[in-house]
Image (cartoon, rainbow, N blue to C red):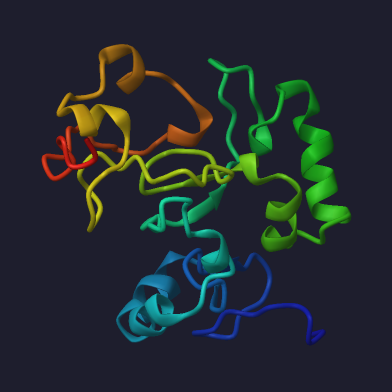
Length: 182
């Protein structure tokens, strides 16, 4: 086996190997090995530096508290595909990610930040004006609705976007935000 071919960090098996989505440093052959290793691995995984830490700071000095995640799913409502680009261009973008960027997410983020999302607030990776978490963060939410003490209106909360796909986000308001900025 080549040294560049990963093997399972638990049993040493090769073949269909997946990477830990948290730290990207451990490899697993399946869910049994991953679950079996979790009690040992979870502290190291949480402490591992994330490639996107330098991108977390918002203009208001606060941080996103979620993960920066590459959008790999389609969003028919917005006519977007892989990488949150136009569906008819997504295969080309994915190929560019794999070939030109060598599947390196950090390098690809510099090229296409809108192809990522923050899991804390469901906004695209290029957003740096604040984290719209509506009360789930350690500090108050800075969105206009939370500042007004209002929940997100239906048309905003129910909007289908690639960056919000599969996330269970709060509607707000964040009571800590109300009139704090007025």
